Amino acid sequence: MENKKDVTLDKLITHAQALIDIEAAHPDLLSTSLLKLINEWLALESDSEKTAALPNLHLELLDAQNPDLTGTPWEAEWLADGKVCTCPACVATREFLSDISKFN
Image (cartoon, rainbow, N blue to C red; front, side, top):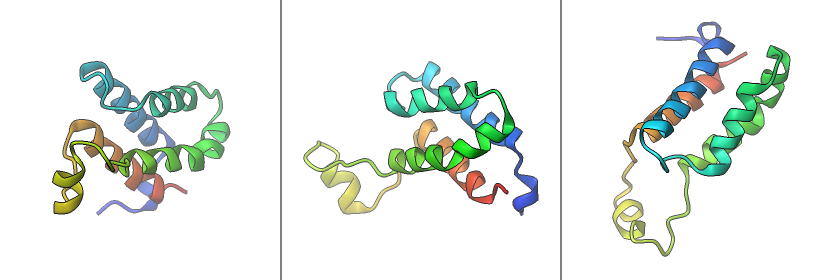
């Protein structure tokens, strides 16, 4: 089992890059705002800037995992049955979130 000291900033960067790669292979799995924030986070020059920006990225990733499906064709199917999306972007996002919570 992985502990907090096993999660490095490099590992988080790898997660972010994986989401960008998934989006390139499967367009429209990530929201435009999340994709923009991930790219901005990756473009930060220093580790301290990336670390300081993690809380905001964490919140955006959480929001991406909790979309409002009210009034959409997926509302009844997904919300009523309590299903969890298993698309590549959602799986990668959950892994990223898990490691962010272990970072520091």
